Amino acid sequence: MKIAPRFMAIIVLLIVFGGIIVSAAFDQWVTTTTKEPVKFKDGEFAGQYNPADIRGSYTFGDVSRLFNIPIEDLAGAYHLPESDPAAVALKTLEDRFIEYDVDLGTSSIRLFTALYTGLPFDLTAQDSYLLPEGAEVLKEKANLTPEQLEYVNSHVAGVALTVEPTIQPTSDPATGVNAASTLVATKSAVTRTLQGPGTGSGIPDLEHTPTDRLVSGRTTFKNLLDWGVKPEDFLTTTSYEMPSANILVKDWATAKGLSFPTLKTQLQILVDAAK
Image (cartoon, rainbow, N blue to C red; front, side, top):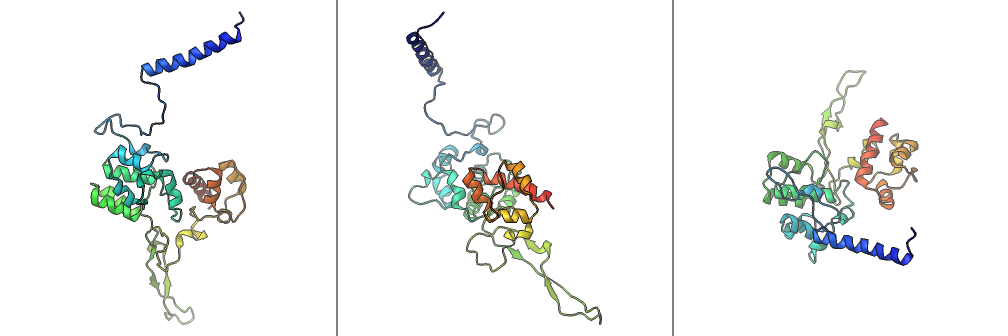
């Protein structure tokens, strides 16, 4: 049986609006985007929001409202503008703190929120970092366990590198007499923390030397090639051809709309495999 076009249009409208009416009747029709993380289903924290589900599309105002964290504490922990800190989107943080070679984006907010509120959070799932001010806020206002305090102290961005030299005497093979002592910076004596801008330590930035084979925000594609990463392996891993050697990997990822933390992990695997 052939249905006339005008009757078909009426049927379509009835289906569409009928579905809306039924959905509204059962409170299933939502016309606005809701910014609410998933909730814990079981245990002591059942019914409370899970900080691990905080999204980059949230604002600091959303985080403050959902987790009852004073906006002043969030603003102090992340250098937010005084004018309207609540309006700042979490997804802008990575660009705000691009000078640091660690992820100070949404994962940092998840960590801060969980520790501030005492909600469950897996510290082993991902290395997340805090600004020094954020760490101080947590130490002052959060009830941290010894394990959490140790994690916070070891995951603060902006701490200068320290090198403790050891003196090893060298001998003249002809005479057997000890010659002048030589300062040797041993690997075990290097505390590899994170150096932010303007630390003025005067110490070489070991975090970014090509010999360290550590993928970071300042790694170029030339570094990857020097570390033994093959263009064909890069193509297999990323589905992209390896670009010009002097481009920063992070800038390239941003231009392609890729997640740099995810790409960094993938490339580090390639670098480690090329040893």
